[in-house]
Structure formats: C-alpha cells, structure tokens
Length: 343
Image (tube, rainbow, N blue to C red; front, side, top):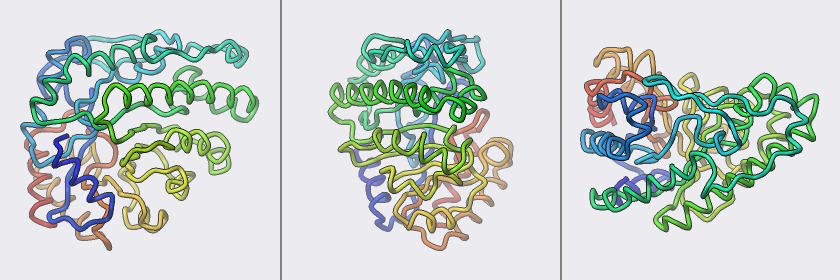
C-alpha cells in the first residue's frame, strides 16, 4: 500500500467521510498467480515472479487498496509447516498441509517453533527482506504483519473434525495446543514489527471461529484473539468468511477495527451488532458475481450494496472474503467504476 492509501484506510477506520467510497480487496495465491499468467508453484518459488505479479496488480488497479499488500505467503502451509506438518505443493493447485497431530496425546510434546528459523515463516520473512527496497522504490510500504489464526492452524495440525471434537472431549489439551500456537503467532508478529518498523497493522485470518457456537468461541476463541490483537498498531484486521453468528458481537472486545466477512451477511446488520465501531470490508458475492458474473452483474451488485447502506461511514467496498480464482481484469474495473459512480 502507498502512504496515501494507508492514510485513506485510517480515515475510513476512524469513521471519516470519504467520497467516493474506498475500494479494497484481499488478494493472495488463489487469485493472483493465475491472473498474472503463471502457475502457483512458480509464484511460491520465485521471488522475481512473486514481486512482479504483485506490482502488476497494484499498477493495474490504482484505485484499489490491495490488503495486506505484497503478501508473502505459502498458502495454508505457511504456519503449520513450523509445527512439522508435511506440505504438498501441486504445480497449479492450492498447497495443502497434512495433519501432524494424530492423537491428543501428541499435544503434550509440542514445542513452540521459532519464526526466524522454522518452517515457511522464515522464507516468508526473507522474501520481504529481499524485496523491501523494490517495494519501497515502487512507492509502497510494508504495513501489515500477517498470519492465520490459532484455531485455523490447529485445525490443519489435527484435522478439522478431530480438533472440533476434542474441544468437547479434551478441553485441557486443546487449550494447551492453542496456547503454544498463540505464543508462536505473537512471536511471529513481534518479529515482523521489529524487522519492518513501517508495520502499523496486524491481519489475522481464521474461518474456524465460524464453525463453533458462541459458548465455545468465548472459551476457545475470544481469549486467544484478544491476546493476538493486543498490540500498539492502528489497524487490527480480521478475516472470517464462515459464519459470524458466534463471534460478531465480540469483535470490539477482541480489539478488531477492520473486518472482512462472508458475502451472505448484511452490512447494516453487522454495523448494528458491533455498535458501528468496526469498519466492514465487503460485501458482494465473490464467486457467483465477481468471478462468474458479467460486468453488468458486478456493477448492479455494487450499486445495490451501496444504495442499501444506511450509513456509509466505516465501509470498505469489497467482496465477501478474499479475491476468488478467475476474477477478470474487466470485472474488477467494472467494480471500481460502479463504486465511483454510485457513491
């Protein structure tokens, strides 16, 4: 993100009126490599192609905030790899982290990884260091430290069904697991902030909080996310495009001030449920409209979303969730044109 875009984002989060409304998208490996014309494996293994793909996106759509901006990642394998998960990287399919915890008894032997040396997190950091000067020379800054959330990582290490079941059958062991993961994540975010003083935001992605009920969230989610977001940064950004029923009212308590949700929720309701304290980033359907719809479909969806807003403050116009595969340049341009026209 440029310094101007960062200021515009802070203005939106602070509730200042912007005209037109600001547009933002979460972009990473599900969309960016194939849109740029390369395979996912090329994107993950070449610093040069990674940099050029990100630069081409931001230059192609200057009116769009791409969050977090120059995202150094290795798909869902980034964090689980530090805990010993075997990772598979097909040539042009999403990578996958295999389970590394076969029984709850394995949790007792889990050791907190070192984000400087263990797993793909070390590659993630070094990629940013290698490209830092080029990123800054292009007029952008590294403003976010980024990771998946503790429940998301635990579900990869154990398997989603096994993890959710163990919350009920073995709560003590699950707390032990989440504590180790959270301590690792805090170390990771602290390390990135130390290495890149320009960082003034934290971005956490965790869909598993949408798989559990409110009581379970209060026990196994809330305290860990509060600890993660308890830091001196201006932007505390959470992504969860699964169900938000169990967690939405707790976002202010978690410390979140920017939220990217699933597309099947009404922004007016979300703003009411959070006391209009949280900037909402959404919310047209990502696959059925932004990726598979016509340019007219995209424009119509944006118009309806904006016209339905009761309060246009603290809204970052986007799709519900991250940018999905196969979104075309033309549809993104239709999106941004509609935002300018109807806001």
